[in-house]
Image (cartoon, rainbow, N blue to C red; front, side, top):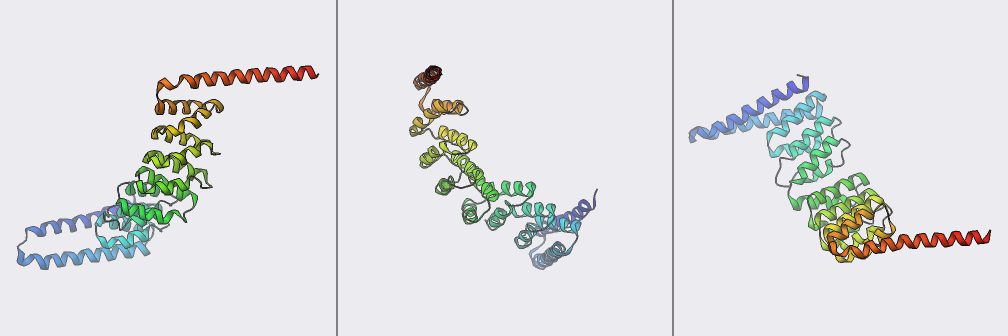
Length: 293
C-alpha cells in the first residue's frame, strides 16, 4: 500500500469513528446528550481545521489525504476548501475535490463543478461532468449560461455537451446561436445538444447547418432533423441525396423516418435521372471536344 493510501485509510478511520460517535449520541439520555454533542462538534471542527491546513501546506501525499478527508466529511464547511482544491497542481487532489463537491445537493457547489469542466485532466473533467448531470437543473443552467460567453472553445464544447446530456430546454435559443460559432467543434456539440433536446423551434437553424463547411456538423444536422421529423427538412435532404454521395445514405434514412417508405420512390427516380443526366452531359462534352479536334 502506497503512502497516500495509508494516509487516506487513517483519515477515513478518523471520520468513521466520528460518524459512529455521532450516531451513538442518539442513545444517550437527554441530560448528557447536549454536552456530548458539543464535544463531538468540537472534534469535527478540529479535524476540519487540520485537513484544511494540510491541504494548503502539505506535500502531494498529505494534500491528497486531506482532500480525500474533506470529500468524505459531508460537512457544508468543507465547500470552501474543496473549491480551493480545484486549483491544486496535483491531479488526484482535484479529483477528490470534485468527488466532495458532488455531494452538495443544494446547488452551492455547481459553479465550482462547472469550473472543473475546463480541467486539463480528463479524470477531473469526467468526474465533474458526471456530478453535474445529476445536479440542480436551475443552478446548472445559470452557471453554464454565465460561463459560456467567455469560455475558450474546448470548455465551450464541454459546456454545450452537458446541456445536451441534461436535455436542457432553457438552452435552445443559446444553442441555436452557437450554431454560428467559428469553432466547428462547438457547432457540432450544439447540433448534438439540439438533437437530444428535440425542440421543434430548432428545425430551421438545423436545416441551415446542412450546408455547414464541417462534414461532422452536416452529419449531425441530418441526424437531428431525422429525430425532429419536421417536413420542412425534406427538400434540402432530397438535394443532399442527389448532390452528395458521402451523405446520401444518412439523408435517405432521415427522409424515410420523416416521410415514410412510400415516399422513397420519387427520390430514387430522381437519383437515377441525375446519373443519366450526368452521363448524357459528359457524352455531349466529349463529342464536342472531339469535333473541335
